[in-house]
Image 1 (cartoon, rainbow, N blue to C red):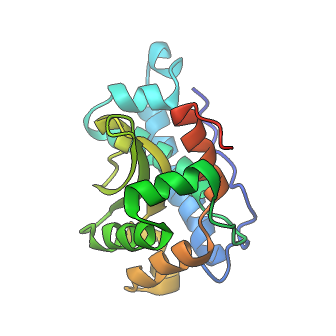
Image 2: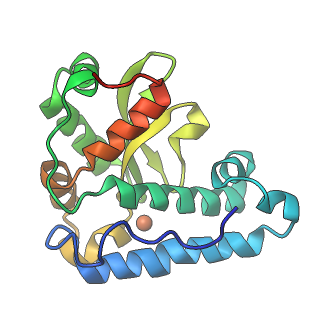
Image 3: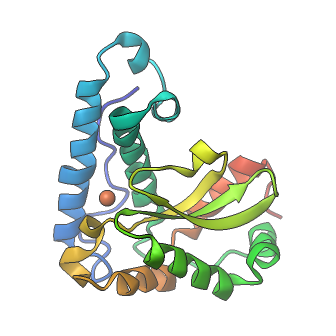
Length: 202
Ligand code: FE
C-alpha cells in the first residue's frame, strides 16, 4: 500500500465558486491527509502494508476501518468532482439511469434528498447494485463505504461539514445542488460502471 497522499486531480482553485481554494486545501491537506497519517501510524505490520487500501478497509474494524475508509472515500470524492460541466451520459449509462430512476432529473432529486437527509456527517453515493443489476442512490454515516454492503461506488459527495462550511455555512442543500447542476464527473462514474459491469458503452 502506498501511503502517499494522492494529489488532487485539479488545481486547488479550479472548482471556484462551487468550492473555494481554501476549503479544497484544508480538506485535502488537513482532513484527507490527516486520516492518511493516522492510518499510516495504525498499520504497524508489513502484512497490512502489502495490501491494497480497499483490502485494508474491508478487513478492518473500528478506528482502523474509519481511517482506511475515510482515505478511500476522499480519494474517490476528489475524482467525483469535475471543474468543468460535463454532459450527462448517453448510451448504456443513460439507459440504466432511466431504468433505475426514471431519468436524470429523478436521479438528481433522489441523490439530493439522500445527501441532505444524511443526519450529521456522512457521504451520498451513486452505486451499482450487482444483485439487483440496477443503479441506486444511498447515503452512509461517518466513514461507511458501500463496498461493505456489496455495492460498487460510482460517484460520491462528501457531506461532512468540513466539505462545505466555509463556502456555504449551514446551506448543505446549496452545496449539493451546485454539485449536481454543474460539477458531476460523469466520465469517472461511467468508467466505474464499465469496470463494475464489464459492459462497454455502445
Ligand atoms: Fe471530507
